[in-house]
Image 1 (cartoon, rainbow, N blue to C red):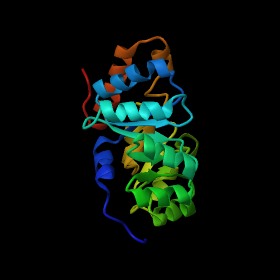
Image 2: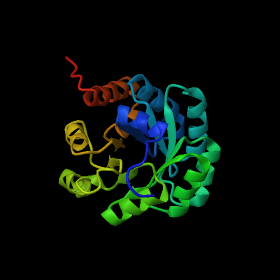
Image 3: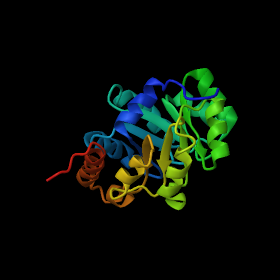
Image 4: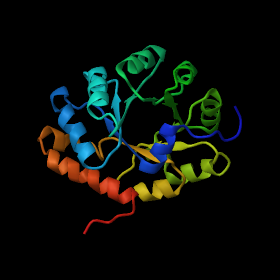
Length: 219
């Protein structure tokens, strides 16, 4: 597979929404309220990482509860076995910190978008050629936005999701540098707010991010 491909329906939706909220390490008894706060704040893409206790159950629940409203995926999918578990739980997409071609091929066979973690141009091209509909450029916090600009120049046909180090202050800069979307963990899904049960504040934070990518500044 060489050159640009037609984006999948899911990727087109991601390009419009521009944010993937990442639930990682949230206590299971607070997960439902956390997801609701994200939904109420205007977040559409929600990733539950598999190294979160009860992750598969959350994915199944959220798929059923937010059908037609949110797009639920699995994160930190490290190998084929985990990819199969995520798919069985109902994940609409699979995100990894690493690139495993067996996971990508499984997604292609099952019609599930896979967005593997990549850092170097070689990894990015290889993952895309294997059939990944987009790649996750990680760790963005360490690589920096200039790195993204530089690799976008020769590889602008490959959709890239920037993950790591993105916050409310730099999200526009990262998107302007060419990322199709960003992955947001603790800067959006704030564990302190979750622990304190401040879900109204969590919803407002989500709303701030959703407004920022839509170019709406709240008064």
